[in-house]
Amino acid sequence: MAAPAVPAPVARPDRGRVLGTRPWIAVLFLLPALVLLGALVLYPILWTLVRSLYGIDDFRHFVGLGNYGDVFTTSATLTALKNTAVWVVVAPIATTALGLVFAVLTERIRWGTAFKLVVFMPMAISMLAAGIIFRLVYDQDPDKGVANAVVVGVHDTFAKASAYPGARPRADGDLKASGGGSFTTTATAVPGTPAALPLVGLPPASVASQAPARAATASGDSIAGTVWLDFAPGGGGTAGKVDPGEKALSGVRVEAVKDGRVVARATSGRDGTFTLPAEAAGARLRLPAANFTAQYAGVEWLGPTLVTPAIIGAYIWMWAGFAMVLIAAGLTSVPRELLEAARVDGADEWQVFRKVTVPLLAPVLVVVLVTLVINVLKVFDLVYIIAPGSTQQDANVLALQLYLSSFGGGGNQGVGSAIGIILLLLVLPAMLFNIRRFRRENRR
Image (cartoon, rainbow, N blue to C red; front, side):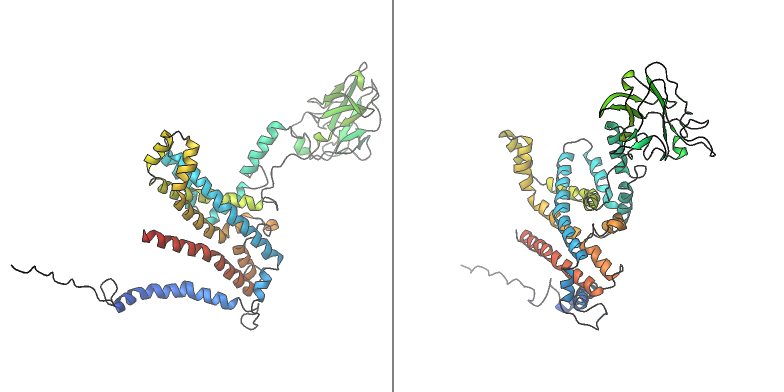
């Protein structure tokens, strides 16, 4: 019986070869990338590390870790550290959560693809353009800023705006300030004697559309009077008297106050006149502060208190689409059988989302969250453009402080380099986490 044939040994590539070729050929192909990596990444990192050990005068004065001490003792950099911590905690979580909501909801609507396109569209806009857009959105003037236009519109719907902000009585007149922004006559109202309530302090152009003022005529026991702008075009006229050409102030609320109690109210008409009932006899006439308070100007979005949340809102507007697209891609790989099984077992939609969808999407959510953490540590453009000069220090972050310390007037590249190294050390844990996660994925 013939012996079984022994298979010929399979030739294996040499241990010294990579992908079946000679090592020096692999090195030759990798050399351009290694040179670029060293020139664009490794060399700047090493130079920044060395520069952070020297003072403001280049490499003439060695200060060791003194620049790092300055970073943690200077008020500007401490504010930047605090704001950076707020960014790292709030922005990635809020953006990821919003992207998750968008990704899940767009699966249920008919025009989900169009909605995703609209939400993702801000990613096509540069940080510079987005900063300019939101600088206008947050403008304090409601005629320019969309945010304040909405806020003022809603506010004025439920709260009546003041009629004539800034108006005041003449210094030599009968009307005197009575506290809280209101004005009250020193003399009491007398039936049959017209009450004159002249005001000044308003630009004539602001009341140009008002009708001419008319001197009131009192009759019977009622109290009549006139509220008007005591300013005659071209000058002249008599103070405290309605002169030809002077404008009426319509819509002014007038109160009759007796013994600290309001006994009657009236509102001036189109010609500035008003009439109070007989109960107002012997009372002082008061013009409440509501007539003169400054009109509601909206929210100070870029003030010291709200500037950082406002800029974070602009960041979320830009990056929510990025989170949504990645999470939506992960959502397509979720087994529908598991979702249907959970529903069959009696779980409602919220329970399916919280106990099935989110745990299955956990790897994708981690990827998005870590990516956004790295991104917000480097945020610079939005803060520099949106925050006005008066509140830029209140919105300061580490990347912006690096620029300000090195080139924006500080002129201390030693401190700027130290901030750069600190930023690198803050980013490294997230990078190492991603590398370990990628290796685990490849081993599966």
